[in-house]
Amino acid sequence: MSEEKKQLTLIDVKENGETSEINIEQEKLRYNLSPERVLIIVREDIQSIYFWKGSKSSIRKRYMGSRICTRIQGELIENGADRYKIVTEEQGEESEEFLRVFGLEAKKIRQKEKEQTEFQEQEIRRSDILKKKLDEIEEKIAGEIQDILEDDEKIIWIKSYKRVLEDNWLDSLKKDSRYKDRLKKLETTDKFEGFAEHDDKYVITNKKMIVYSILNHIIDYSKVEGKKFKISGEIAELRLNGIHSFDVVKNKGRFDISINVEPLPYDGGIFIVEDLSEMEYNKFLDIFTTLVPFRAEIPENVNLRYTKREY
Image 1 (cartoon, rainbow, N blue to C red):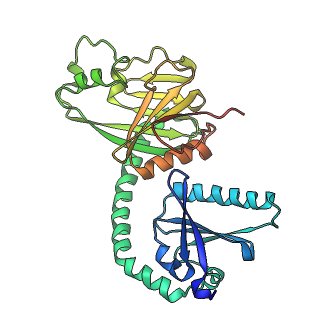
Image 2 (image 1 turned 120 degrees about the vertical axis):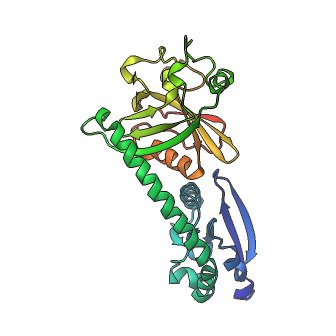
Image 3 (image 1 turned 60 degrees about the vertical axis):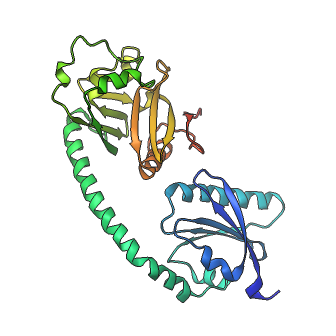
């Protein structure tokens, strides 16, 4: 068989860690190198596992792809093969080895990237504007909570969520299964009059989770263990070692995460971090698996509970 007709099997990595195999002729490989993709190509003839990451692929896909490469490498060794090397390739920065092994020409790959340049530059400009706004929000929030941080406490993650307070918002909460059994009996709602919206803020530090929300005035936290939790007005603080698990619900491409305390006094979670984008969701997972003492299994699906690992 000529080199041009050489067959390849691509392993296409999905967000949830699942994979699909794509059988193609090697000469068509360049058409499958899409920016959103993460691909794995095993070349047994040269004992190499190529781990190719598209320029716009998500952190989640890249993480799952890395795990799958390691697993494939281990399985090959267990089956008696000599050690396979894992070669990581970034789109736009492919090594000469990668281009040579797969019969690719840098010029053709670069041409495809050039066609996407204008779109990507527009996305970068939009991203820079959004990042500037987020940085301003984070700086403001950090200033507001600085007094409650310990000397060696560092802010890792901040999320701001604009809660719209319609005329019947309290009635809506009473019907919401996540809140209805946890609301205080209010004699008056005068303190909430005049509000059209409220900026809820969620902060994760290396020691605790802080939630600054108008809901903290009306949620009953009396069943939560006092040593790991405290509340003052709109600001509630939960030590990270008091977290038992978290529940993830996906709706229309956005994520809601319920934080459960240890022990479990509420089915609906002590805090509910609402309306996370996919990027924010992946960042949340990254924090709760690498950056803080609490460790959780990385979810492979949503609408499930993920519990702290036991060591």
